[in-house]
Picture 1 (cartoon, helix red, strand yellow):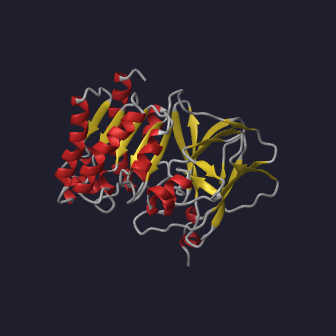
Picture 2 (cartoon, rainbow, N blue to C red):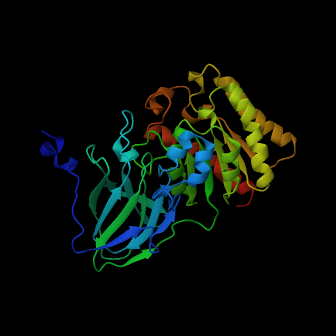
Picture 3 (tube, rainbow, N blue to C red):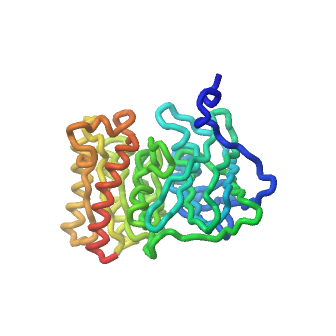
Length: 356
């Protein structure tokens, strides 16, 4: 017997598109953020595939994962249904499908985002699913739909009431997006919902658009990736790949090099260097921490006034640090909220310093 037979709150509404207006995404009435549609591969992506495959095998796979992807729109519909198609449904033992493979819908009211619900697959939905949520309707309401953190999306359609109004909506301030580069924590592992990664939580506070280029196990500071990062017009670059450098020697060989290469192409973009929160679990943790801090100190010595440093040691504190991670490494929702709180304060100071 399934749990939905016992508790109706676990039932997922499937529905069908009969009597509804269907919009295939990308669509001009839906603002697309954080991802683009890669025509050559037939899927949404974060890095062009031609570049991703030159970086490393992991990035070539994970560029298809839609972490940080969003569509923003307004509608007065009382029903919203999505149909998603993907290559594989990624099921992980330490992360729920509500975060890895679902779509999260939020309504924007003033400066606040209010959680509406999740469009969720079930474990047997191997190549796609259809799910439905009820909306308030009645008047135009503003929505943000967050894409999965750990899944590819080959196709996405949105179905609304047949006669419903729908308009493109931009919820973000007139500031260039924040660009994040880093590891699985950056990608969003292991948030319970797709709007629960720290970048999304920060965005909900400062209303600045963002681009998430977190790649589990695959952010290693390669020159090809650095050049791609530098090609993106952003208001701030957050560099957080400590976790994915295979060892301290690799980090030493690549970290300042990444800074120099990026800075040569983007002389005016503030850079925030971050170290990992679970440094104490790594025999080289303190060494790696110092390597990253040294990049910051050396850049400052060279006269760079737009570099900043944030130690991951302050994210969780010492008293109950183990309570902030699922497996000692990847944050729980509590951990992501703590990270978002600390990083948001730092970003706010950076924006004040640079009059952004």
